[in-house]
Length: 299
Image (cartoon, rainbow, N blue to C red; front, side, top):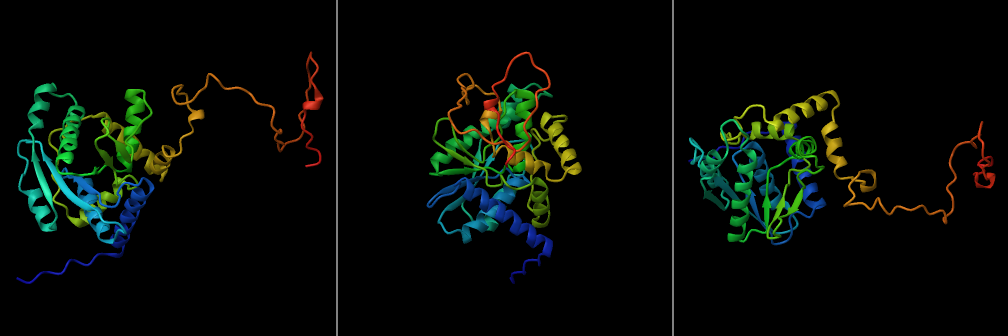
């Protein structure tokens, strides 16, 4: 049977591919996400983001100056109606190593969480524990997740609004037990670009019916807020993301991370010359040592 030629991509599609690959490559470089000899376990949920991550990682694998392996892993959580055939067929079409891990976390979540309550927290913990354990069993040295810039900014606000903590999803994370390293290669990618990418790539997307169908989740509210901001001020999400890369601990208020209690003045160094005219005291009932003034008349 003759092999059909791949459809020709438009100029905009080619630009988008280059942009996404460039952003992923930069994130990998900035955070040293992938090293020589790594076995990268790409966690594929069936959503647009993980499909895009896998596609880009495979492309970069072919051109990277280092040698690393990519293994696709899907956790089948036994959700009713989950189309079990789709992902194996897709992985086979890519001719890449893959595993489908069967674990009925769906029943656990439904038994533990009351109807109408948010299932995301427990679901993600069960999924994370399974993936961590499986990564060790196959010798994976990195676990790649498909979270993008929008996810990370949304998580920042969720933690501030509802957890009173200033934290997000880091691009690279060492697990608490130090047995796994999680990477997020899409950290510099915007969701709107990934949507366009998934549309023309025609990934076989599988919706999450366990938590995706729940209404009024706080994440959806935060997403709507950020979408509105971004529409009114393009680049707002990027600006917020860049702020978590540029943290000034002395300008925040965490006494565990910065020693506010022992701040002391030091007037032993040369005084800076401020760029304004000498101030004038119009009224006072005490004398000021004028020798302390800075002479700026000859600046």
